[in-house]
Image 1 (cartoon, rainbow, N blue to C red):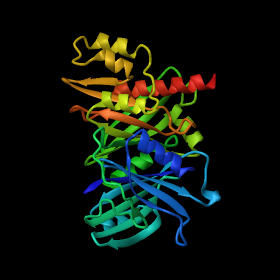
Image 2: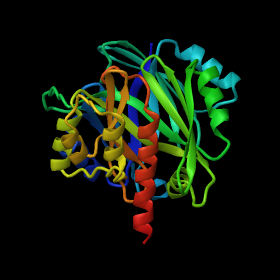
Image 3: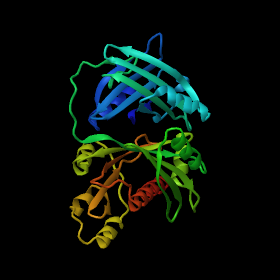
Image 4: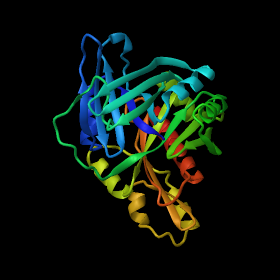
Length: 343
């Protein structure tokens, strides 16, 4: 057992963030926590199929910052005591030692370790029917809805400082027993990046680090705007990417535009694409062919106005990788957006 349990996002205004997830992304509030004698924190748990997101706002002004950021990626595991032993052996710092919480349905055992920048990993051992059990939260009264557009989290991309990729690759390989999938270097006219893909079960991480060029790498820009390394983007699996883009766009979400020559080059290289290319181009969906299978991807613009975090939608159709051409196209799109905003 090793899967993503939930994502925690620190936000300056929990109501505004909650409204975005509900109205644009069709998440549903499952439970919430309000400030009390025990905690200054307000938090809300939202769900869309197998995706759980906690929004957290700390009422103490010293912890507030202007924009939101991904604070924690939590994993569901089988043996917390063994994992904590491995973390300590590797020199990791625990921000929360193992603690057990119980309710009428079972128990959860939780520990948290500090990683890069402001990011932590929480590890959760659940027993019984405790999928939606989060200590301190009170369940919402609304009935649980079945959403159809998004399925689960496909991968998490992490922006790291230069020459730090190997260090954190080794952490995930040695401590969490992930496997190395592949490595890739992207070069454009202006800059570049290095990426390392690692995975365990259905959990994928993409470790990104900046590469020097004529201009500053967008990975370096992210690190500076974010106040240090952190989660650059999270990808959601969808079974119908075209409908998802149409729905989320109509709800107010802005998506990146693909580089202008992208679709002309795609048609030139693939004369018999079994796809509605006009629709994909209109919706700015990237295509990567692997034999008879095609990978479809698209990316939102940065969500919080500081050129940092964004979401990705991905429809795999039997393709396990990421597509080198799509990775480069994404890099060029964000680079173009940064250049436009600098004018």
